[in-house]
Image (cartoon, rainbow, N blue to C red):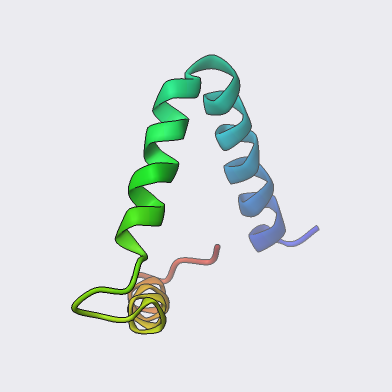
Length: 62
């Protein structure tokens, strides 16, 4: 398993722990995330491309 796979597994474990221990927080987070990614002044596609560009700029490996 490489570093990216390990980091992704840790992220998934954290999300599962949040969903189990703080389900309302996780539900609200998902709601905000889905709301932000809706078409608006920028399309969903444009927002996704910006997210990829930011991840590359900050050297995010997830």
